[in-house]
Image (cartoon, rainbow, N blue to C red; front, side, top):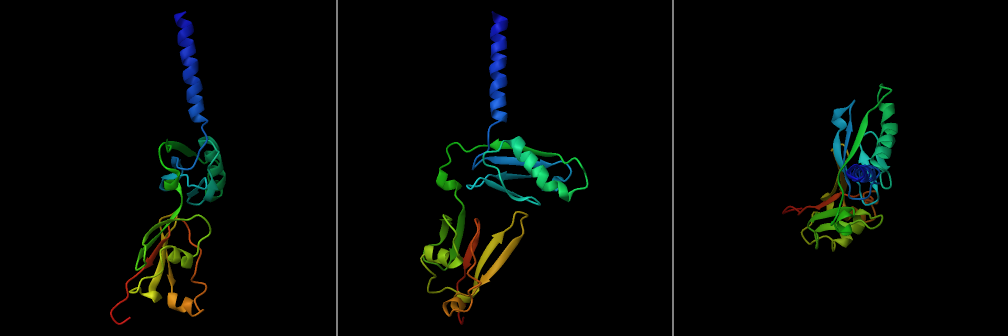
Length: 197
């Protein structure tokens, strides 16, 4: 009888371990990804609200609904052309999964700072342009440097791109191209104008 109980306990443990291993990924999951052949790619990523992750040399790829093992295979397929080795060892481990994180906190955001009426973070619910974001923030303030507005965007590799925008030229119908479509994480900076600006 004791042996039967031990075997049943071991069987239940094996089933629960298999269930954890086969658990599918979802938004908010934090993953540790390592590439044996290129340790500088090792990083921790979070599955974004759209169910994707961004990874250097692989770009954006779907993680939602995949197991960690399936994501390993997807990453290996995306990365293999960048390496001479036939065998590429990619490991994906789930570090944590959201439990009590409100869904609102997982939504992609942009940040508006400086001379606007209501600076702060704003949820990206749909395709949003720079002018729409400024409007969401209540418009530019009376002391804003209209010609020196910037959008700062950090890439997956950590590099920062800066886009300049001339609000006055846009008002006059000139700087139409400067009204770019924003991405999650973009920071819109509306600086204060100088004394004689």
